[in-house]
Image (cartoon, rainbow, N blue to C red):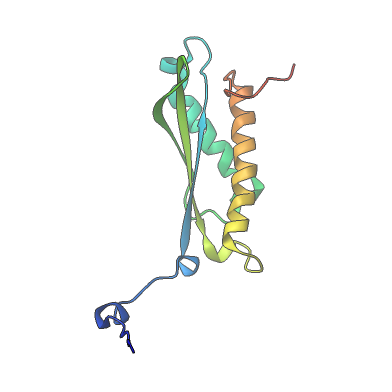
Length: 136
């Protein structure tokens, strides 16, 4: 007969349930192609525009713990070309997210809506999203 006793140092440690934390971060990363000569002249303007646009979305307004941030995160090699990548970082107050369903489901719905809004914003600014066909 083998009796396993829990490690007392683990039992005595405090844990933190992340679903009970005061805030949750959500990062959305997208590839894009800047308009011709648009990187050096418009990158900062586009990033500020994305953050401003996302902060005004109904899905974000009430639940944001701080203003969204949009960052140029580098260049990813994809096939024969290198593709710039941006990230949008959102910090939500968990008490403002729906309490009737899981946080992950709420964040998944928010991720979807914000991603679509950012792609539409970038397309309106003349950028292309690799993998999407632009409708004329």
